[in-house]
Length: 83
Figure 1 (cartoon, rainbow, N blue to C red):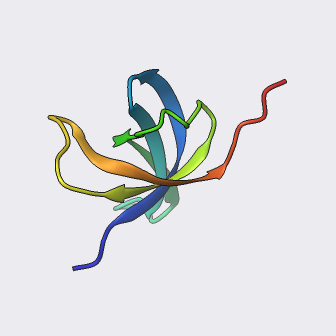
Figure 2 (figure 1 turned 180 degrees about the horizontal axis):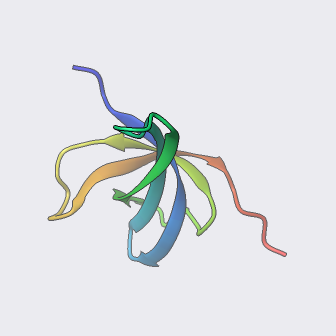
């Protein structure tokens, strides 16, 4: 079975070693067939606390790490620039 991977945006990094990643998916409306954007939030394990809010990251599915955490940050694609 293939490993599931998603790309999303970090929306929260306030927990220790955990980030919340918002993943957008484009799906057609069941009746009207217009493409709509659905957003789902995943909690992902960030071992080194390296992610910040606004970073684009790739997350990979893994074994359950806690009650709500089943994803791990694979790599950071784009970093947020601080001004």
